[in-house]
Image 1 (tube, one colour):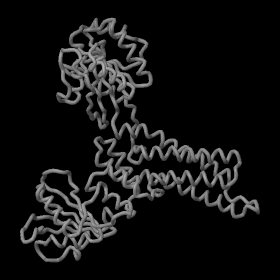
Image 2: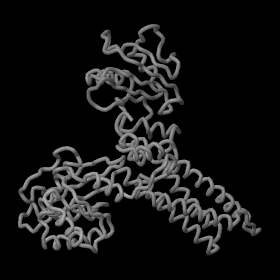
Image 3: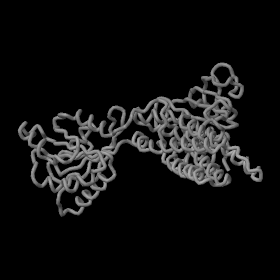
Image 4: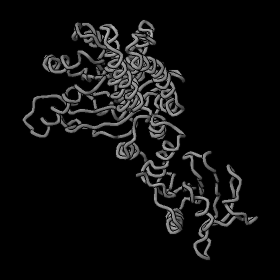
Length: 466
């Protein structure tokens, strides 16, 4: 059972700051806050305060003034949670925050669990489940593109698309099931030709949503880029340059990088997850060998491969490394970067351009990571390799794995409906498959989810206070 006791929590990030916001929500929120708050001017209680207004006053701990605060009041159902809600803006002292929470708990509140405010908003019909999940994505969005997608979903763009599909299916399944009541009279209420057109259209829409997941996942989590190559090719120098910090150790000693180093860099509003890998070479060092094995695993996982080559050490052994790298990049975007070009002349660079693996299709860049030469060209190549389409404000793109899995099941169901129409199967089997498709679409918005355990698992991913 859902516990609907009045809850409270600190909604601002943990730690000390200029101000902090403590949120209280539930049927007793106004009364509980009245026990600790006294307004500065008139003594009107919070329960009598006009909704959507702010009052200045003091929080009292017994006879002692704990802090001067602002209290915002929202009456049900016109609040984030759909319940009576009070938000206390206090000074950001950790001591003050904790003492106010202790006062609220002592007067009848319960500390909110992770995501419980948003869960109550969902249960009270303020948003559906896909919108609720988008709240987290808005909070953690770290690029313009990921914010745009999350905000569109939170506004209900994705939900409206699914709702239209469900309503169309519901209309037809009602007619199909009505036929079953008149089975002896052999009447047909649902026009099979129109139903086939509808099913084909829904199949195309669901397929498009499923295909959008690759783009959505890349925007949400970042494009994975593995920096690979021989030892001392300049991989760590390049990572430090892109990050603008000394993240990786740079040394002339071979085999310095033995483990995977990762960080995120934002380029023109798109996040790239860069992975600095162990240099590839023949070695008897057990730990270094393990690092090199991880390098090849990261090549398999990454979307873009940046192959760093030391222009000054170009020799036959590069072919041996090419045999290990190139086959693993056939289905990926490969960028070949010749580093340390500040140490070679134009004639030597021309030889590299003409003779190095001409059969391999890849963007080739000549840079000096040490002197920051041609790094802008590399950034442009990365943006081109990402191959992300322009996302409009109202475009619907799937970013959530749970939604992706539900859509795949919905597609299987609608494909069975289509096959059933082609085979002329009876209405009861058609009805079952249509309802199954509606069920999986409903799982995304929460219309088909009733279990407390499932909801608890979804909202546990939220932070406390949201």
